Image 1 (cartoon, rainbow, N blue to C red):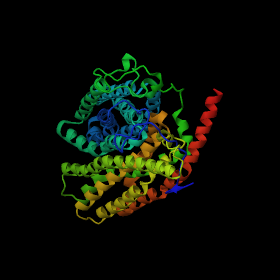
Image 2 (cartoon, one colour):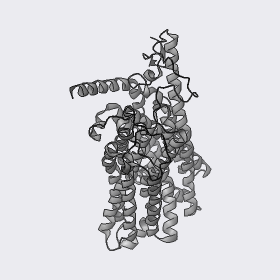
Image 3 (cartoon, rainbow, N blue to C red):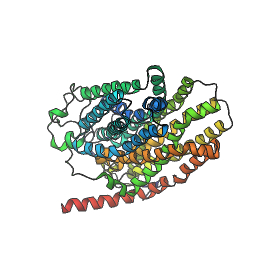
Image 4 (cartoon, rainbow, N blue to C red):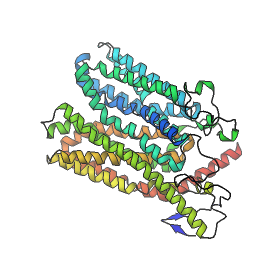
Length: 511
């Protein structure tokens, strides 16, 4: 059987009688994956991305206020830092609950509940008396429980509305929100704390959260396929937006468009999938290094470039943020391009081999046929190489006191490659478990936040022990050490998926 770049041709059937695709981006299929138009999908994705920014933003906007809090509460820096630690712990754990709930009860009500919890906790934090340290600690836990889960819920929404051939571009844009938060958070926090006091940080978060809450309440439709299918099945009244402008007039009573309601599935069981666990580990290491870079920018730049003011140091974060925004958009489109190119190659080779009757598009894209691991991960070596090289260069530029232009340019490419790695891994994880998209993203959040918290907690110790340059050589070496995971998943992934599918079919037959 012919081969193409190591991909086995799959058995496909001719899609006779179907109209040609409108353009080369949309494959010819009997029924669209979702009823929403591209502009409506972008609006949904932008809303989900806006909600997703609150998890890292809430964590990082708080950091500049720590010195002020130590004075206000008359507590040591270690005790105030404990409020950061408990936040990061809840940030990793809470999405496991909310994500699982969203996969069962719906995306819209769960997202609204998270935003409401976040807004109320911010009001409490803004009003907390300075003689109640215990209340500050408790409210930070509640704040994390509300904000951290918005990432998993947004990923679930995108998995609901986007077919595999377009999923990359949407995840590319959506990842910008969660990843830019660490960059703009310290800048906003510093400006608010310096200009209006530490309580202004929580009032700002409350207002921003309520704006997102109102926007979600007003326009975001329910997308869980077990409830609305491809969007054409009318949801219960409580699940409908106040202004149903998205998908207006396209409801039908076709039961075939609705996915079957699934039984509760423990999200922790996803860690038993070898490909999922390996990919979670693979993304966690670069994410932890990225978080270490962001967490140490202010202190390192203040030491290496003492002429910079606090505001000027804050503006340096725009470099990494700009790289992430551009990288998210470009990488997402490249992901979709790879998917379409490989899909078209499979169909063409099937036709050239004389198996014209097996060239049906929907058979090529079925899970058991399509080499999704190769389609998604084939460009990963480029991005991880850029990430490793730029991290090493960034460290040595600061170590040698080079012109500030050097670190700023390298921060741009660190941001670009970081969001590219995140977009690729998030997309392939949802491809591997589309029916549990929020749950699997919650698992991803748990692992990478745990690694990120660990790295941030030791980064200053490493910097002081071996210096800036060798610190980033060490961290980059960890990224290089986990890279073999990518070719391993590309090689073994299809077999692991086949085994899971066989077990699932046996289980469904017995039930």
